[in-house]
Amino acid sequence: MLKYTIRRLLLLIPTMFFVAVIVFFLAHAAPGSPFDAKALGDRSLPLATIERLERLYGVNKPVTEQFVLYLSNVARFEFGNSFQSGRAVTDVIGDGFPVSAQLGVQALLVALALALPLGVVSALKQNTMIDYGSLFFATIGTTIPSFVIGIFAIYLFGVTFHVFPFVGWSTPMHWVLPTVILALGPMAFLTRITRASMLEAIRQDYVRTARAKGLREQVVIVTHVMKNAMIPIATIVGPATAGLITGSIIIEGLFSIPGIGRLFLQSILRRDYPLIMATYLLYALLISLANLTVDLVYGMLDPRIKMAK
Amino acid sequence: MATITTTPGKTAADRASELNVLVRKQRSLWQDAWYRLIRNKAAVVGMIVVVLFMLVAITIPFLTQAGLFKDPLLQDTPNQLMEPFWTNSKYKNINYPLGSDQLGRDILSRLLWSTQISMLVGFVPVSIIFLMGVTIGLVAGYYGGWVDNILMRITDVIYAFPDLLFLFIIMATLRNTAIGDIQGGLLLIFVAIAIVNWVGLARLVRGQVLSLKEREFVEAARAIGAPARRIMARHVFPNLLAPVIVSVAFGIPNAMLAEAVLSFYGIGIKPPTPSWGVMINEGFTVFSTTAWPVLMPAMLISIVMLAFTFLGDGLRDALDPRMKL
Image 1 (cartoon, chains in turn purple, cyan):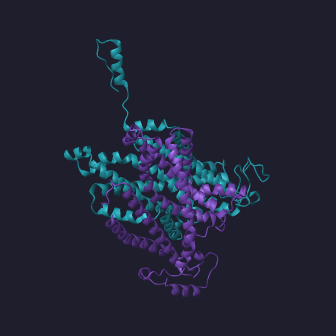
Image 2 (spheres, helix red, strand yellow):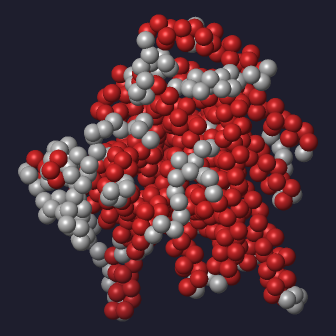
Image 3 (cartoon, rainbow over the protein chains, first blue to last red):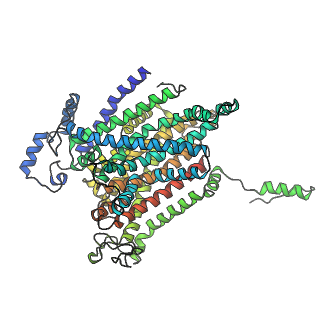
């Protein structure tokens, strides 16, 4: 187990390296300069200033040379300064990260808190109105993209009824809409998985045995069915995390939330190379770690799975 | 068709049952799947909606030319921000049944034209993905070796990127190059979506091949000396088609959605070409005045996404009754 974990952690290094290669060279492949009018929006700078800025940030050098320089800086945990604000990238991300993390964790908690009971109940009451209701909800939630639901929600709760504010992240009232909308997708998906894996577990022989030896229904459901049904559920927390990350970019853009997702969008549009690199590396690291965690948890929950390979 | 003869000298009932056996048509597995699909009401509704949108996408240029719909780019400033015909607003004009946007362009016509873009973005990249994914997956799974190794390493890296992040960087940097200008950015979107998504399908195919090639019928084919190419084409490929079709059916709406998201953030289709994302993006500039320019494309996206999901779910149930979620 420990050996496996170390192996997987070491494999992170080449993965992150290739992520860095792809993003760095793709980002630098764009024509023009990060300081010309297209990248900066409306401001256009005199040519001499652009050249001075390019020299200052070293973007006039050959791309390979820049990349080697960047890698050696990253090895010393220096991620450079943002082209837009001139602040250290680590500071900029440090400002945005708590907001995004809060949004993501809130959404994950909401999703789990609602999806698990909903899935369990709909499996126990299969083919009743409750079941159909939750299946209907799950289909809508997995099918209609969060940014479309977000638009409807803004229109309904923000513009028409003025229940919730929908610009920014300043008060807890601002948290409601983005959190719920970000949670909807994973919640619907989790509900489906929970229901399916409960139904699968209910039909197992050991459940019949448990009933046959006269255990109370509650005990059968909780200790025999639910315990085994949780295994497949645990495995999708990894993809769900990846989904939350992409989802948060869209939601942060839609609701103007000052998190990493919005930084990411801005950095891409403004060609802020140090910020682009840092956000991509951060996202790739988070997703890889989430996948690793899931694999480890999976191995612990289900002893039949060997940590080979 | 051969004539049906029955054994003479038997009772009428026996002859009838004999006839019955002979007359019943044989059904292939695919026909079976088709019957299962059309018995699924939701899938049929989904299929009808999808076909309808495909028809719209194909015929809209002719319908516009014939004068049935307005030019989607035609600006009519006096008639800007008209509301749909069923609202009580006094700002409405029967010539603009679903209203008009901030430049006085007809929303109905723009929606129909955006269907064309979406169908292209849905089907073209998915065809590329299908060809690449199946070929590479087959080779990697059947022969193993360096192709397999490279595929698995690429997968490791791609899996560390969520799809959308990869799309963002490709689109953001290449959209201002020559390739990004072709067809208002459409070609670049095709390529980008294909590059990002072929790996998933290749992996799926590879997994299927790995399990199929251990099966008895493949072993039997090898035993009678069938060449690898024939085994792959005649024995392995038809058997892995079912999960591939399901994956492709879900890939189409995902590609459409990706285009909408990219265009919404201004790095997809270039305005003024109407697409879902472009319309929502432009609509948000007047959102506080009227929400219809945003709500209309949002509703259309919902309908199309639901249709494809129903169809995809139906296909999955029909093609492999064991594969249940």
